[in-house]
Image (spheres, rainbow, N blue to C red):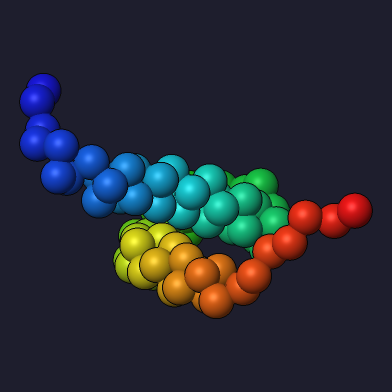
Length: 78
């Protein structure tokens, strides 16, 4: 599969948000409801909601943090 280089950052963000939302939503379901017969069903309903929040946050938050970091002056300690 060949994808133009200009889509690299957005694809990376998409895949990272997909993986992180998958893992985090599963473990949050496991913590909140325990390991039972409804875990998979609940997780499959929660994961799309988690991803719908994770993707825009993963895309926008680094830009805001970079702007903030540019305002900070870092100095070498002695």
